[in-house]
Length: 103
Image 1: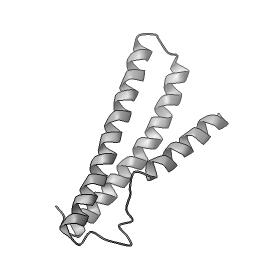
Image 2: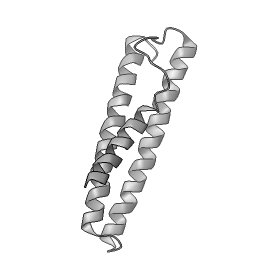
Image 3: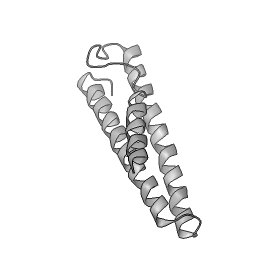
């Protein structure tokens, strides 16, 4: 259980690395900065899709009897934590983009 919580924390911290630019200190005021913001959003969305695909594979494995309910539950809990973090990051980036008229 402790390892699972540690792993979930590591995933949250690693997902924070996807945002390469601190937009609170340097807001996107140029077209180039807006493109960088868009690339950051795209990178996170791509990773979210990959993570969702992996979670779907675990769900299929559960239905096929290839993994236990316990293992599926642990994978799902970790995925939900990570997904929540990435969703919040994307929302924040979109809010910044709209505020600075990037979109």
